[in-house]
Image (cartoon, rainbow, N blue to C red; front, side, top):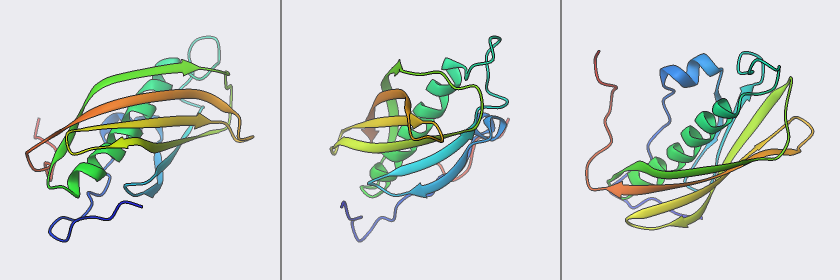
Length: 145
């Protein structure tokens, strides 16, 4: 388990506008694991299946949050530079669980695996996301529009 340095505390996830519209809920958040859920309802494409773009959006969000939590323990922030996904199975209803776990936690780069699974525990999508850590503090509030 990764421990925060004494001078920095882990960042706490704040949902963005898209996350809220998609119905994302945070269940767990730590350097070692971020878990969230999202309903299929409201996130379907025209054929009635969970939209692949919704899977990527929520997967990228959860993976990025995991990277920022790690970065915050170093007094840094993180920005995504690469994301890829493989869709394994469709979903028409229910609640999707999204789990991000680290593959690599460095001082300049992080890589996370993000798994999306259905209520039966079946993998429906796998993402890999890479973030670069930047030497600047995490913004405490969103920019005003």
